[in-house]
Image 1 (cartoon, rainbow, N blue to C red):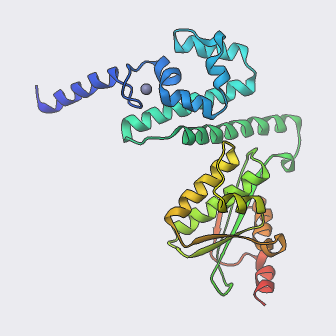
Image 2 (image 1 turned 30 degrees about the vertical axis):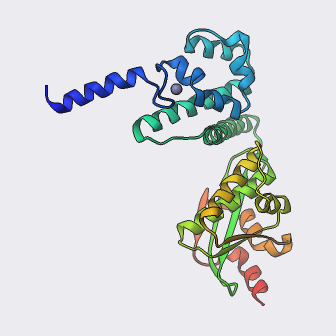
Image 3 (image 1 turned 120 degrees about the horizontal axis):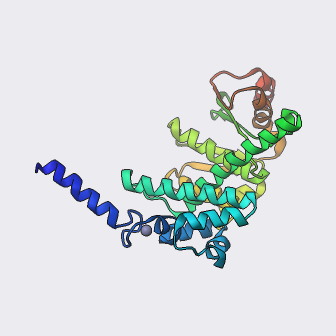
Length: 275
Ligand SMILES: [Zn+2]
């Protein structure tokens, strides 16, 4: 036997014995989705621990459990459970193949995003059936505008997604996108402005908690801890008119739009502000 085939065999034996995520129990479907410590924490993180611990779903085989959940729970809960299982599976594979480890908080975030996608597709379909217009769809749009220290326009960016996230989550998400864009562009001294006071305060006092909003805030200040010249500042809504106008114009563009020249819709605003 060549050394190569031996190591493959050895690896295969190993992977059928130990869970790649926690490395201390025999891996089967029940373990991966329900019993592994990371899986259990993820059920709690997405607010589904009552389903996990429900006496009606303690079957000894994973398929039977999932089948029972599908038979008894509302379609909303079944949708959330499905997304969670998918994210747990994805996490397990990412650990196994790439050695990437995700915290339950990140798994919750993935499950939440996947759930939003799933939900909005369904909402979209039901809207088409009932014949309502696009204006009724739930959509979060974001407008970003980078300027240099004398106020000159550098780059603008817009993005929208079909989601059901709240207004404050949308504002926090926009700020996180702006920081990621700044990092991507190699800018390390940036002042970020938002007209949402509760967001700026939450970042300044490093507020922690379990809400989706605070989990985005947490991502913001952990990014800021590696970019010490990133600052966040509160500005009045009128001062932030450029970004808001961009966000409103987003609906006419594709889902992601980046431009290096001042778009017509904000041209006069940028010039007014520089005077
Ligand atoms: Zn495990």
